[in-house]
Image (cartoon, rainbow, N blue to C red; front, side, top):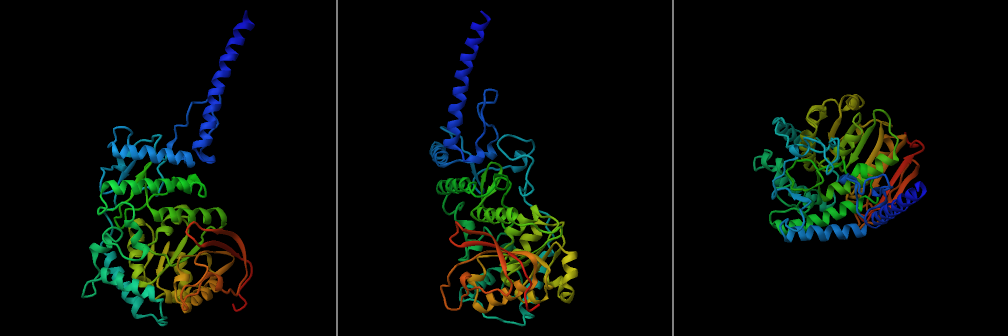
Length: 442
């Protein structure tokens, strides 16, 4: 009798295990490999941790269909999983008051609970003064590419009034107040946009979230669910699983993952970003490499955005603006030791000491420059980069105009071992090289 009873229990258990195996098969169809979990007889029926689930093709189809029905039924058929800045009531602080299955825990440092309302207003005068110094003291006056000349004029028209005073309101809202041709401030308007209205913005938001799930195929899920947009610049974002998403954030997620996974930096690394834009990538890297010095370089107009963005996000870090260091450029090595961020225009490059930089980053920058500017930077990259330092590039392979200097034309004095070489989803090669010998001219 005991054998019979155990046999019946054993057979019932087979049915349970078959059901679990069917659910394991379902997971393989719906989730990407890093989001699949072993469901044995003693495990729950599903994984409750929503932030670490990333959908495969079939999962994305199901998600898009469910969210579309949620949109057209106004949440009656399915509850919406997406919230839109500027349209929905979003209380991030309340969301993170206690851990839950639908958001990352503990709260990632890059998730901002609320807008920073305590930024020091003196930053505007500092930015204005630094901009003037950057223009008035440039000894090179290299010709910029015609496209960047046009963009600089467009930025300047918005940034300054007729008397040359900085436009506070525009700078505070530079990612949400006006669409300009450069992607630096254009792509903020491509998803959530009051002019589109809620319906179209929500459909575009579904596409962005689907792209977020696709990115998990090439970006570690632990990095992907930890990234969130800053409120600096007041852009409108897609809110999903407790983080704020944008097109540029996904772009930065690929770069951050590539750099964090493929470099071994010193305890106090110096990271030089050429064409730093408004500082979005630097914000992410600083979160992962807090004991670093970031040298952020761009044209004077763009540095106004960068200066505000970095000041907003790092009120407790030491930031060197040009107005702070104009009389100390000859002791740049000491500045590196003192500051977390050093924000400089191009003509400061010769002051960066030889063999002082651990990582140089240039994305979508040098291939857009005039040839004289690009060659200028390559010379200083060779000079400043340490042996066993890294150079990371995403740039166009071929030039479109005669005055450009595209990736395939670059010539280095030093030699580099390739650590990473991939075709970027952004249409250009991603290359990470490790310097293996000194520039012979040093």
